[in-house]
Length: 448
Ligand SMILES: Cc1ncc(COP(=O)(O)O)c(C=O)c1O
Image 1: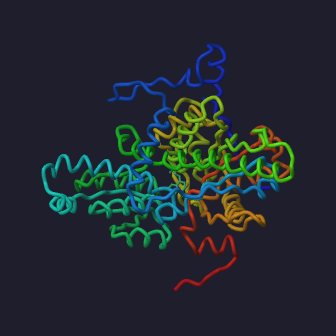
Image 2: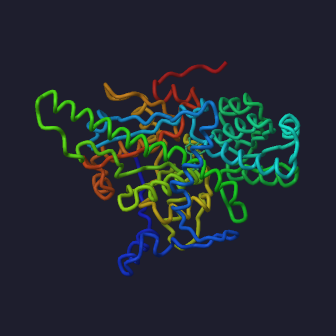
Image 3: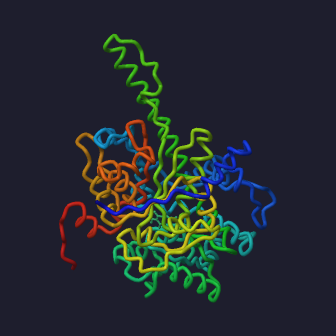
């Protein structure tokens, strides 16, 4: 049995208790906060609500490469696992970049470039502005996917990108960033120390830091990055509504063909998710998506669970400690889930997850591997989803909870049964193809 750890969210539980006592809203205890430098008071989840997402989608539609990524309905797999529904948003198709990450980088880079032009190139012709933009250097640290997105956006705007990667980064991921014209530096330290190095370099050399995690005093860019991520959440809920319509039409047609009564039972074709499992590295993506879904569905919001590698379980630790402080994972992050190998939570992500996540899972690598096979080798009749280690972590967990009788108590506690409709995001495709082939097809290809 895979060793899975689970910690319910004590902060949310306390907020719910207070809500029951006072009759206040879900955010009664934590929701109303004033951000330094912000005039209005907004609760954390609402910040990533529909208006924000619509702005982000409109921005991304401006790129010729923009297309909604698929949302697949794995109905046979759902049945086999004993679920009411299993929907997977496949981000391997995002802008041809194999991961969702570009949504954040491109949105923030767009805002940074607009402000930079205002300060440094106001009144210049478009040609002169483009020439001037070559002086702008964007700096970031990445496990691979975020840096690829920043490099892509920098290239679009004619700016320079310098991308730092932690030790042990797969050459394929480094090369994918270099191929977009960015300078790459592989450090000899962990992801979190690589972020610090990139931040220091930006201050020393006058570049602009485009980092996908927030800390005290660095929140504007990461907030924009999180806003960019809401693009896929808005797409997902729109696609689920569309799917419901399709299912309803199909059911009505079947009923008419067989001269039966037309379908009136909405529950039979419902697609609104009851459960969402989100993978977290620094938790910026999970925070943005969880915030959007909570705000979008309101009273009918799904139960949201966060999934991390056991060897980078900073949210799990933070929840377990329950002392009002954020806790880092400071051990060796030797996990195959490279995108999730982050030891320090993003403060903005945590603010949302603290309010809305029901609990935190820590999983071993073997669970992510199972997830890759589950999605890549589909049940007959279902579409395949090519999903990398970080992308498939949540699918692996859901299958493990459902298939393994020893997890029965946990499965029941989180309510995974035939009434559950589960939404997952496969956040990346096969970003390390040698590893993918080995894990999914059991094929080892010699290097060189
Ligand atoms: C494929 C993939 N999935 C999920 C994540 C997690 O995002 P976050 O670091 O915002 O938690 C990352 C982060 O790089 C990633 O690359």
